[in-house]
Length: 321
Image (cartoon, rainbow, N blue to C red; front, side, top):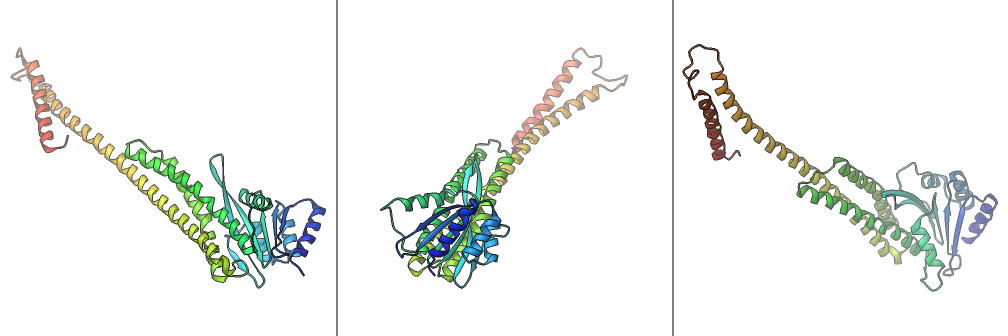
């Protein structure tokens, strides 16, 4: 039976329900090469179509559609299935959309719960006559996965720019808000959590090969794998820089506190000397030599000033101020 036959049956089945958005590409090299993209929020219907119409195993279908497990790869005798999360930005926040891939010799099925820009762009390119030709499902799979992985780079660059801005603020002795740094750290952790499974999937595809990776496309998938490694390394680098920024900020705050305490200590010591003089002349004894002296008041002030001057010069020589 041709790979196109179950596709036509599934499309016919779906037109009765009007739940799933189908986009089907049937290539001419070879004749039964096909790509089906399914977009739907009705998980039960997607599972029913993938299991009954396309013949994929229930376990892999549930893992790809329901998204309740860590994205991974499942390799069967005649096909393989895996999940790759795509990323986009909405209102300044990153959102991830898991995409299920089911690959057979001449059939590629992609499943998602919402429209994914990378898949839409690839489909639009294929619909343009004379743009380029794809020789196999393996080559088509590479183009889609490569577009998804490459889309992480600009988002990661924006996070890197924000981290560098924080770094500049620390060196300019500008107060850095802890909430901003923690938000960036959370963004990096989530991005790494989404990218790590992609790296593992690419590694498994390269090791196990067909049907998803043909010999002539193995170098292309190796390139995608290298991109995932580069992304994870850049994320780890940004996290290390962010941790260094936080430590530097704490050091700056600590140094500022030490400077303030040093100044306050000097002032307190001077005031203690003044208090000593004032306390001595404030004692209620009848016989104090300077008590009835005409210049006793000025003498006490002078003694206080001299004490403060001696303390200041002493601290200055010690390098404490």
